[in-house]
Length: 116
Image (cartoon, rainbow, N blue to C red; front, side):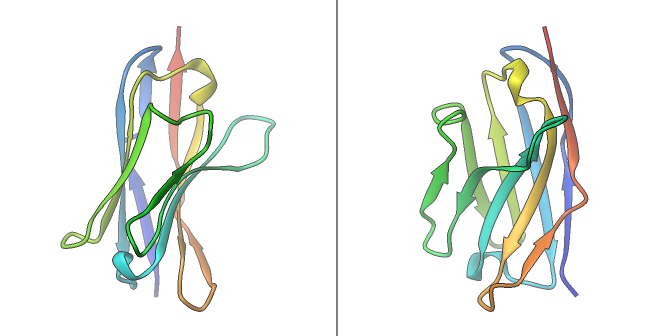
């Protein structure tokens, strides 16, 4: 059974930083594509950052240069370092796993609120 558990969300002022963590069980993260998505109130869920099996990463244009996705293979954890946070970064952030059989798994989400 695959489980993804996010943590690290919270309330932060504009310009601040947060580090989100995703603990994975049931799959080896280094063998799968791992993503961070977010959903702002009234908006669709959007892809924020991706790290592939190869280690290559991709980012939404809105977060390039500010967010960094990384993983700790030994701990089976994925992280999202978020710097220079903006009001529009507010939302629920979800950890997502896409396995080799194209099956998808989601965490329960963690709230990030950026205030002025």
